[in-house]
Amino acid sequence: MDNNSAYPVGFYFSLSFEGEDAAFKEVSGISKELGIEEVAGGGENRFKYRLPTTSSSKNLILKRAIVPTGSSLIQWFSDTLDGGLATAIKTQDVSVNLLDNEAKVLKKWTFHNAYPVSYAVSDLKSQESEILIETMELAYTYFDVGTSS
Image (tube, rainbow, N blue to C red; front, side, top):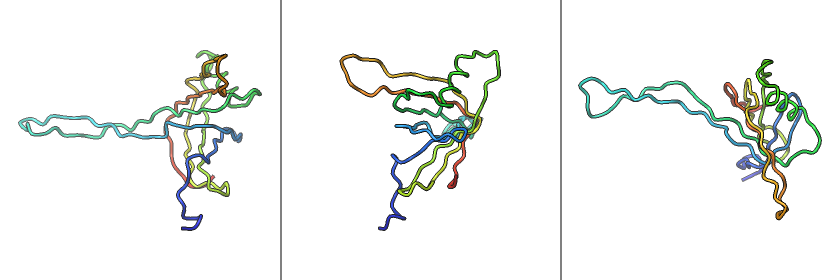
């Protein structure tokens, strides 16, 4: 098998936000699910009809080593989470790109109308020398999948 037909690896990806590329240790929550409603039919006791309802998605979760300098992504989180609801929440499109060994985009997930809903920093422990991780969580309206940037 040559390199062009090898399966992609999950550790080579990038995240783009407002033209800024950010490195992350982990991205999770890329999923869609179609809801199901069970309806019993009158006089039919052997089964229930399973009817589709709306599609739903989980929040996008981003994890990385804490960045000591500011970034537009962190500023967006700060503005949204600290600003209260006095001003409208600014939504953005956020993209996660799966890359090949030549850094070309193999798959691109674009999360539309995303906005910050959670920010957390891992516990501070004086007895351990682990890297401090920040976790950012985004809600979004929907995502689509493409193959180009």
